[in-house]
Image (cartoon, rainbow, N blue to C red; front, side, top):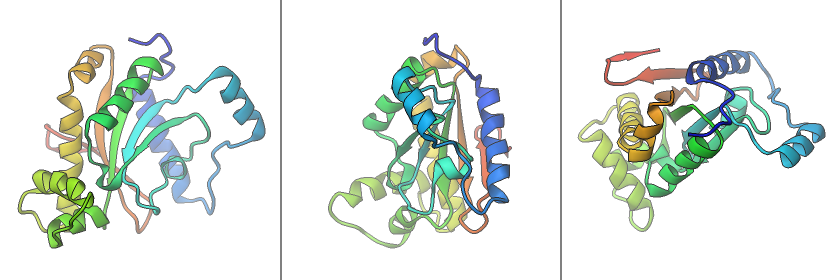
Length: 197
């Protein structure tokens, strides 16, 4: 386990939730991207407080959504927020070497990758993504429900990782979330207990 932990999972979640509340009323992002912070993080390294796995959709901007600046979030982006060994390796790096205690899989409504899995039969490399989403959503055709099922599947894939399970003993937490494109709200979800936060 890393000795660099600066935020517990609970503290990191509170920071994300408060950042999203600020984002909802902003006209532009207020995250710190100053030259001084660029120099500091270059010299001293990064200390992100949370790992965010999210879709590559250009309308989903994690740093803005959580009102964060340089060095605050470790963001992993892939269409449909699917998880494979590359994403797991990135998560393990951030958890073990950077001390992140919170992992959030953040899907979003009106996701093109989820829509492709429901309504189309893509070819080429896209099929790797839509096949994984199809496995997650089964026969579900409702956009919101399918997006939630897809997030749940990615959360479960992370939780099944041996290294992640080992880190959970040290306070690591994995949560699902859904970003609402129409209003900017992030809905945090806890699976297994049948409730959302």
